[in-house]
Length: 156
Image (cartoon, rainbow, N blue to C red; front, side, top):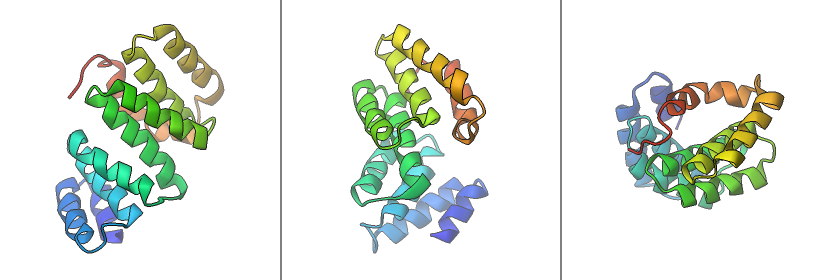
C-alpha cells in the first residue's frame, strides 16, 4: 500500500490504479486498499468507477483521516456525476460522524445548491467561512473547492 500512496503522491495515478486493482484481487476486504483504489480512479476523472471503492472502504471499516476523506471524496464524486440526493446522504452521514468538519460542510453546501436549496447552501458556506477559513481541511480541498466554484452546475 505504501507504493500505491507513493505513486499517488507523485502524480502517477494510472500506475497507482493498476497497482491497487492488482492488490485488491488478493485483499478485496482491505479498507485502505479500497480507499487508495478509489482515489486513483478519482484522480483520473473516473468518478463513477471510484464510487464503489469508497463505499467498500467505509463498509470495511476504514479509520482515521482516511475515513473522513472517504466521506468527502465519495460525496463529491456522487455530486460530480449528478447523483445529488445520494451525495447529500453520504455527506450528511460524514457530518454526523465528523461534526464540524468544514470540508464536509463545504461539499454538502455545494450539493444543497445542486438540489436547488441555495439559501441553505449560502448560509452553510458563510458559517464555514466565518469559523473555519484557515482550517487544514479547507486547505486540503482548496484546489477542488476552487475548481467546482465556477462549475457548480456541471456534471461529468
